[in-house]
Image 1: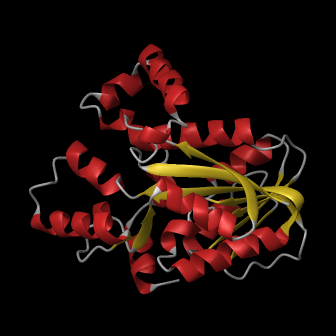
Image 2: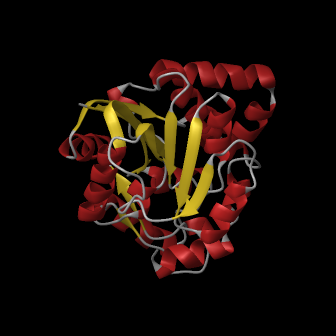
Length: 265
């Protein structure tokens, strides 16, 4: 694990990220919805690689999957191990998975592809996922959109901050996101994908039939998003609208996170 990643998660509470802010709840709700709709139904063995504190692992275990979690951050593994239903939680690296060949039905890569800024490391992580999957097994990959900082800056009125301007320029030009400050709101060193680039990387690692989805889409940039999310009727309309445009190519990059599904030959 890089020093910048370690410092970021020492300062940032990943355990609360998907629970408290409305945009975090949107990410969680949409991600679980996509996993439930696109992946084969339980039973089956799921490897949650980069699984954080186990939000998704616990939910999938309740659906009847046997879920094993791996993460690069020790405090995340400790938190995940306390969650009910998770078969195992261990410290590890997405580029060196501890499981044998043809072991799992599903592999989740919910963080490694943006925390690995070098293309060669992302390729290794994808190849490792392919190795541990059974023939016909599925991979679900999360990525951060190349335009996430732009959308975030517009939403949170950060565009006049010179530090943020420099971060945004690098994001848009190169995809490599860096944070020269100690402000965890500006994230940590990461790679932000173009949608078509993510598809190329997944197919290049040997996977077939890649399907791309926008997770949050553009709805979270609305000035009154928090209020709309708090209203059950308006929240339902937002989610239904997102489902209608989640695979629209012209809007695919207008999201904070992308999700891709593919399967092993």
